[in-house]
Amino acid sequence: MALIKRNPTQEMTRWSGGFPMFRGFESLRRDMNRLFDEFFRGDILADESFFGRDWTPAVDVVENNDAYILKAELPGISKDDVKITLENNVLTIRGEKKNEMEKKEGNFHRVERSYGMFERSFTIPGTIKVNDIDAQYKDGVLTLTLPKAEEAKPKLIDVKVK
Image (cartoon, rainbow, N blue to C red; front, top):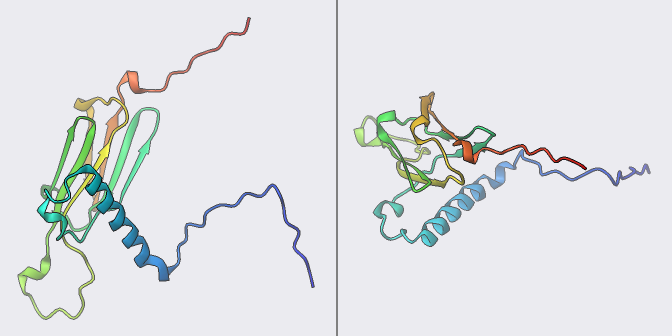
């Protein structure tokens, strides 16, 4: 029997490959997070579309020294069906992924894609240059670049030793 020697300096990292049998749990986790976010924000009952909402776009938010960059996957959505607002440092993306089944073309044997209204809101932690926000929509991906104002950018301070 061969023994494998353990390396005490080797760190454990989270495997991001996922297991196909747990994909449904990831969707459930996202839905539960959205439910609690909206409940504690206080508008769960004010938004009628909450109970009929079946689809939430995946979003990445990245911060670098100069800007916040947000990428949202919006496949099958026209740019005219997306509205972006910024108010009190809260960026909101709203829209609708329209149901193609309403066209009644043929008999559907399987329907797996989700449709409906969506809304995602993000609090921007710093001050941004509102007039310089850039929005691009290409191949179903919305990319928002929110440049940081000078006072929000990190500053390098030299420490002098005496």
